[in-house]
Image 1 (cartoon, rainbow, N blue to C red):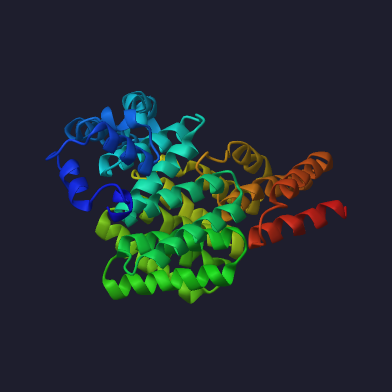
Image 2 (cartoon, rainbow, N blue to C red; image 1 turned 60 degrees about the vertical axis):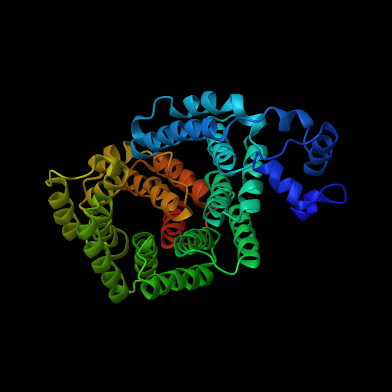
Length: 393
């Protein structure tokens, strides 16, 4: 208020104007607009708070519809753009304005429209001015994840670390949920760029913080990371410990995705790390016979089924299975991508066993091309060893 008042107005007068207890002169209005860096017409054409609240309520409903039923989204984001677009130039202050700009920018991005970054920056500025840290952090994480989905992992991590450090430097207290969001995404991105030590440190800090504060938001995601790390390092004790924790959480929360993950990791460990194909086949059959099996996880299950068939010497069936595997649009992490890039290495081994050397070379070359930019993992090692095997023939 003092900065806005400058040397021509008083804080008391600004307070009266803000609370509709006094009307500024045209000269004062011009001065206020100049101080704010906006056109005077913007201040004279304000939208009522009530109207903005109604627009925001409708926008939030559309966002919730899209979030809850993502697979059947029709045109929610287009509706959001049409709803908010007439108000964008007038969204200059207050929570409603910031949140509408936030939603609008995300919708523009998801619909592949230009200008979303500028709108996102405006929303962040308003959140920052009002010290609404959870929303500011969420917007920063979103901007980081945009780079993540483009597979620019270094930039994604750089943006996230910058957003986090700036928020932590300006604020003595960050709410637990925001802290856990930062811990989870930072660990994910450290893994994505190959910084395993930093990823483990942040992941463990998040788990301990969650226990200490008795706030279990993101705990399932952190336990999944811990399970995957233990699996890749063949730390069986740790892997089984985190699997038990996840299963308890999944049963308590009735979370089918978490329960699926515990079953999937067992099968995946048997095929990828132990090469115990018969045991994996039994677990896979058990999962597929369960009426509650989640069809959205089909790509992962198809991968495991193909590996089992390869291990059992059913090469033609395995090739048919691998041919059905597609990498879903939501898969972007190097670990997940590398798991799916393995399908071409397994296909190459199947072709080699069937005497199709040309197809074997084509398949393994594709696997190497895809995985070459990924950080080192057991999956990348497997692909490179398979390449050496086939190329040496």
